[in-house]
Length: 413
Image 1 (tube, helix red, strand yellow):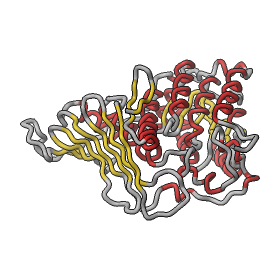
Image 2 (cartoon, one colour; image 1 turned 30 degrees about the horizontal axis):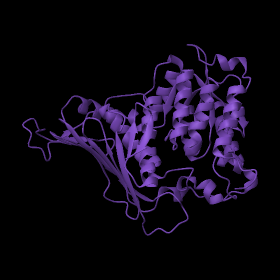
Image 3 (cartoon, helix red, strand yellow; image 1 turned 180 degrees about the vertical axis):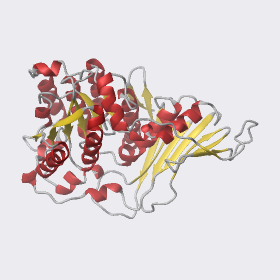
Image 4 (cartoon, helix red, strand yellow; image 1 turned 90 degrees about the vertical axis):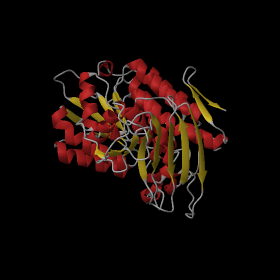
């Protein structure tokens, strides 16, 4: 390891000392927006996902009485582009920052939107919570179990309003599916299953050209073991450990979060996972094709797989004793009695009516003001991240992984 490299342990210790020992401004101790106060927002991470979330914040700013006061990104081009975009829409420029910790001290902030590489999410969330700032955090909430628990505890200790970026649970169609399943019309739930396949792994599309002088490589690595500058790792981090766990965190957690939302059942009891190769030869280090099978309380299973090399044969469905709920078309789910011989089986194919809900970002902004819990609160975020971490741990150890919810620990069995 390079002599001046920052280890995970030393980085977290230093970052923790920064937030615990820092003298915050008076405003940081009273950062709850009043009923008539304008909500001050800071944006941390201005890349592809950050840009989409920035657009959502600006879209709902007037309705929520909110304003973007600051933006942060270690890549100068992304930071400048974000600041200009906000100024074009708002009419005044936000304060740009290259270090997220400086943004946390910005006067007038009530909340932050975190859209950075996955390994950074829990550290930034923990620091935001300690700075008395609410947070919208992209999923997965974490890819390391220790980091996840530390962020969760900080949020609970500080009363932080957190919205996890699993926006599908705010779609009216899936809220309709939740009502249908919890009403018992599908009977006993036996299994949820999804296949989300693609010809080329999605992280290939994010590769860009960038020079090291235009960003902060060490800030990107954060606590990861030092490695020499690599623009492919920097821009294509979704395909590299330890910055991502691939499809488990990038794709599957949308599915598992919907299982939790639709059934109301958490957490998973155990999981087994496997990975395999395909014809794409590339330097990426996360597995391109994966499968995970979870065991849940109540006796039902949850199966997910991504296969790369062919983008067909995709599906998303729930299988019950009285029929099947097909959610492959997210906006037009349908239920039928297919395969059931139960006397109460569904008699005909039924379109699931949508149930209106606020858009995910607007829901969070309203909750920042009301102090109610949003659609994907910190508990939902914890269990969603858990489903990304458990199968990855199963791959690493080659064993079934069980979650002990009493001791809050992962156990190889």
